[in-house]
Length: 222
Image (cartoon, rainbow, N blue to C red; front, side):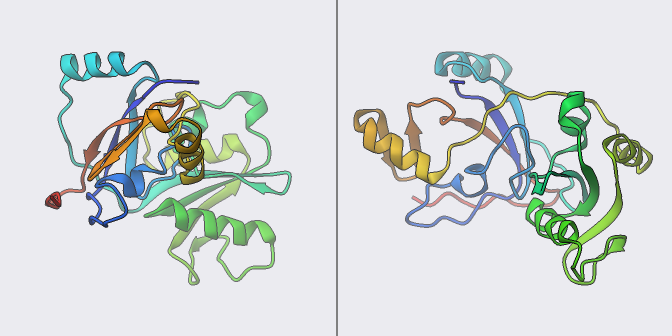
């Protein structure tokens, strides 16, 4: 699947590092089907061509906004000895029937990484992580464990407004994939200062940052 989706990131802009372009930390983990970034990131448009993305931005002129990023609810699936990445309730609710197998966990946490570590411990069955309520070993809270329908219902009962959706299978490539692209297509790779562009499928992204209430965005480094 090729193209450049337009997405938005709900979070503070990362501190600049000489070896990382401004805005790359966090955004480098964007995956439309899973919750992989520290702060919320929504796919607004695409994937399509760069020209289509530019036209969409010019016409829509999306503005920044503010969201709460703490105590989020995640749904995470354990099936056939595999723990999947966390999903939002909307994406989980939009799964086809043959994608709903296994045991599902409804976890409250601030970050997806906390959900993954906590659920892996519970899936092993020999962990000190709490299978119910706040965990004393990590920064996660187990709201419920059950099948897909039970956890969707529990998420709705917890106050979430669930709108099922199926985002496209698109993500930002890994550093290893980027290195491979740069090696195989050096003329298509451009990187300087705080800018990075890679003309390759599933790579370039036009992103809109969102921030928690009260957050003052950091200044760009020269």
